[in-house]
Image (cartoon, rainbow, N blue to C red; front, side, top):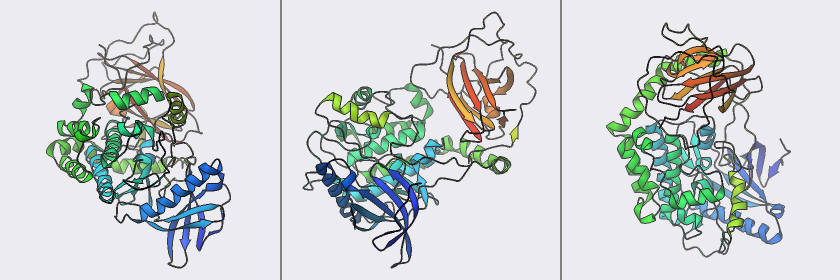
Length: 511
């Protein structure tokens, strides 16, 4: 941890909360009013050349004016602003909670009802901003704070722009925001309105529901093309995985043309809440909720039985992982590629550029007491004595395949076909693993030992957690008739961040 100032203005500095591309956020104390606050600082003089530094300083000061105009429980409040030496600072409401990005990066995806509620709460806050002609322009999981009571607060209006405001800060050929969540008009560098924020919020909702982004590009060129031309709802498996009303909602939220989206944030929020309360949504969410509730006592016991994994990491202000502002010149494709590449050069779910390292936290998703595998059923395949033939790693986008009835196990491959298997994914753990495999009837074999179907080892609703006998590398075989086999490597090491790895894998259906 770098040294921090002891005081900023009249505010006492009591520790660092996080760092991002726009600055550093500290936990502070206001002795005059006797309350804790978050203090966001930026050294404008260090931000590039003089012209760029002046521009960032002006943008930072405008953040205070813009955010101070917003008064809503769903918006992180701004209390004060000022200058301290070469730095500018904002004094913000201290939010006891964490960002949605932090939750998703741990694999804690909300249920359908919860996801719709999070989106509705964010839309409520945006409705207030849009009513005062303010467009956020950077809606993403890292800018959605979730308090310990479940309230959603929209953070960081630092890149927001009041519609019609006289400003020279956004020059022709420049754009601001996080590219994976940008609306088509934002990618094009066109003027924005509230419907642009709703597109970004639709991307966040899609990610919460389907555990992947709607535009999973590997390059800048692909990302821009997908945002402008591809329909993220074209996959039939998405419609099979979601209630029809929710799928229609996402299609409307992610429409390429603004006129085809929701008219305003209030309409977005109202429809999201109506869907969350619908019988179809309740049915889709009830199964998961019931499984988690039934497993809660065992989860607590399992968590207590495992060794501590280090301190928890809670973002307590609008710091969030990666408070970065992306500047990309659109004058030429090469300039766009270089700038946006800085945002895309990280794996999905990882902290954004400039974010503080995430300390490992005790795994909150343990479901059942750690258990060793039971003896295989009589009709289970014998343990393979040689490595089965490999299956090429799937190259298509993952699909939310519906569960199918489990066929009778087949005999294990013989030693006649023993090429080296192709590992499609690697997971690290200190102790054990849960197998969240789709379809859940997929059969699981660890190091040649048959465990059973994945649903028996998902740590939920009666499922168990598999504990590896010792540190090392373990080859896991996932198979089911009608689907390509998958080979997973699990590395058991005391240096892993999680006590129990979430082996979240989807088998690819055979054409």
